[in-house]
Length: 504
Image (tube, rainbow, N blue to C red; front, top):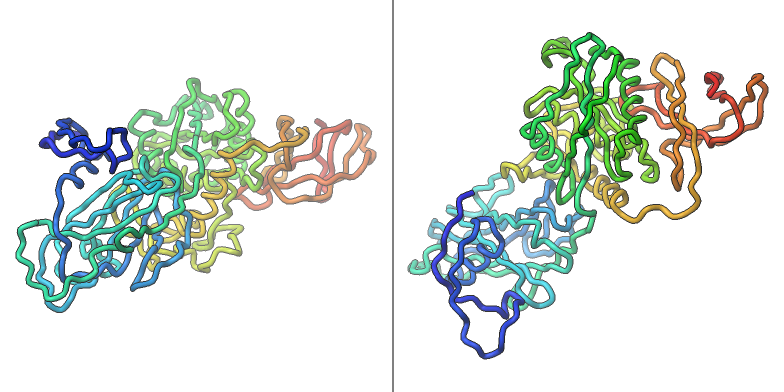
C-alpha cells in the first residue's frame, strides 16, 4: 500500500491513553503512516470534528467476522448468537432508518473503541444514503472495517453518524438518533480468545506411483491462497501455513475414486507427524498431484481429499488430512477448508449425499443458518443460496453452527495442554476393503478420537488374552473405514467386529 501524508493535527495524549503532562498544550504531530494503520485512522477522525447528521436514526448495528452477529436492531440490544473472536478483523455495519424528509447525501459513520474508560481507536467510512437500510444491500448501510489489532479484551464500542460535508445546510426537521448507545454509554462486545492462529504444516507429496515424481504447487502465491481461504472460513485471528522442507515420497497409486489408495496415503501422512516434527497444535496436510492436470484426474468426478475425524482434542495424531494440490483458487484451497474441518472434529453437514451427516446440524438441507460475510471482498452470503462448507453442496460458506464449533475446538487446541498420566495406544488402520495395517504407537494424555468399542486381545497363538475397550474413529469421507486405537500391552493382535488383525 502507498503511504499517505496527513496534515499536522492536534494530538491529544489523554484520549489515546498515552503519557503526557496535564495542562500542557497539545503538540502538533506531523507523521507518515499507512492508510490502514489504526493510529493513522484514529488521528484522522479526532482531527476532523463534524456535526451529527439530522434526519437519520441508527436502527441497527451488525458485526461480521464471517457470520452475522446482530448487536442492536430496531431499538433493542441483542445478545450475539455466535462467538465474537478476539484480535480478528471485523466489519461493523450501521443500519439506518431515514426520516420522511431525508435529503439523500453522503454521510460518515464512525466507530469508537474504548477500553478501561479511555479511547483506544476510532475508524470511519462514508456512504451515500438514499433512504433506509435494507438487510441484503450493503450500499444502503455504513460499513466500517476494524482491524483485529485493536479488537482486544475489554473493548467496548460507540457508533456516531456525522455529516461528510461539515458545511452542509441541514434541511431535516428532526435531529434523529445519530449516536448509539448514547453519550457516555458503550456497547459490549466480549470477544472470545481462541489463541493466535490456526497452524498448518503442508507436507508436499512427491507422487512416484506413475514414475513422474510430480510435486504439488507450494509457491508463495499458492500458500497465500490457502491461507486466505482458511482465514475467511475459520474463526481465528490468523492462519499460519508452513511448508515442510522435504517432500514425502509415495509409491501409492491414487485414482479418482479409489478409496483404498486415498486411505493408504492418508495413513502415510498421519504416520509422518513425528518424522516432520510437527507440533501438537499443528494440523498436517499432505498435498499432491496424482495427474498432470486437475481435469485429467477429476474429469469424470473424483475424491478431492480425505481426513481423519478428530473427535478428541487430546490426540494430535488425528489432526491429519490430505488433498489435491493443483494450483489456483476455488479448488485445492476449498478442499483444504473442508478436510481440515474434519481434523477439527467436524462431521459432514447434510446435503448432496454427504455421508455421516451431523444429526444436530440445524438445517436439514445443509444451507447456512445465518447471513455470512466474506471479509476478503466485503460480500454477503445469503442463507437461501449458500451451504455450510462441511456439506457436499455448493456454493458454500460457513454456518453459525460450524463457526461456533470451530471456535471452541481452536480454543482448546491452542489452550493449555491436558494434565494427567500419559498412556500409550497402538494404532490399527482399517481400510475400505477391510484390510488392516498397524501404524505407530502414540503416547499422550487423554483419550483417543472415536467412540468406545469392545475388542478381544489375542496372544500370538490366537488365544484370547483378555478383553479391552478401544476407540474407533471412522474416516470422515469413507464408510466402514477408520482408525482403531487400542491400549498398548503384552498382546499380539486384536479381534474387532469378528475380524482379526495381523500381528503387531
